[in-house]
Image (cartoon, rainbow, N blue to C red; front, side, top):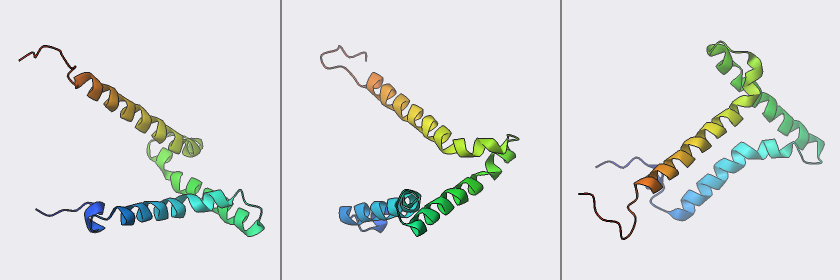
Length: 106
């Protein structure tokens, strides 16, 4: 069987996986965090990154015939949908788990 997960590509090394996740987080969140630093170049880089992110999201609302003003809200909308689905999965899993000492239905 062919294994195609990132963990398999990292030779099942937890350290490599942690390093990869930290590197991705730094790459994605670093420039946005630089917008808060005192150095002028850092602020410019951070603000530029935020402008690029906003521009990247502009075509999405237009595709669904919505106002471009929805674009800045898309990350929050996606996060709320993801959180709601995650909580729902946890609640469903708890509901399906058999209770100790309960009589078997089968």
